[in-house]
Image (cartoon, rainbow, N blue to C red; front, side):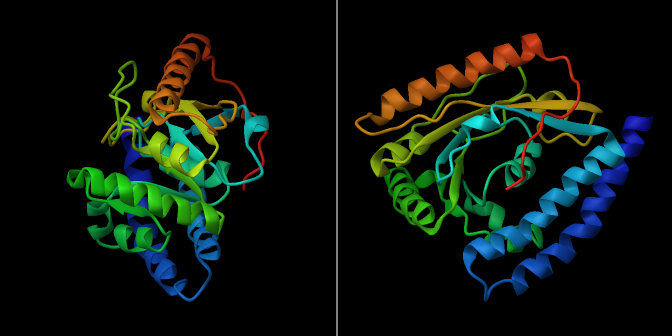
Length: 249
């Protein structure tokens, strides 16, 4: 019952805060895209704080020493809505490669549009790949980090989806460094799940992969191997515990 009650209070807080921040996001339109992103990221920070206070859900980060000083392409596991919040607190300003339908969601989508996302039509095939590559290059040049979920959708803990090549192609084509990321958020905040369980999510950041001279297929395979092996290690070694120190960007 307590999990249900806490999850309800979390959802209520999100329901009340999101329209307010959507209006704030729209008002940031005159600012530089990086400035807009930093302002809007406050919503994610509040939502993570609310999850810790109400649901008892916190997180720890392993591998912060692997975070470069310059923009990279993040290729990450996708299990939950949690990581879309946490990345905005752990990394410098991030833009997402996402399906463009998300921008049509009232309030949430309107605010999301102000974060300079790369919104694609998944059915567009080669045109979508071209769009990811060109806009990814533009976002990196602006100082953004570009986050891609290679599996394309959220997967349940213990399962693996197909690693699509789009993110790796964009990184290899633009000579961008890749940062692989694994986490077990789905154990506490599942795919499309209302319930949020107390505990400590573990997020692990791998060593940067320099893509000069790499083919997209080889890069994609290397990322897949690291993420899936790290997922197994997290599942095997996870013991909860205090937050690992990290500096929010």
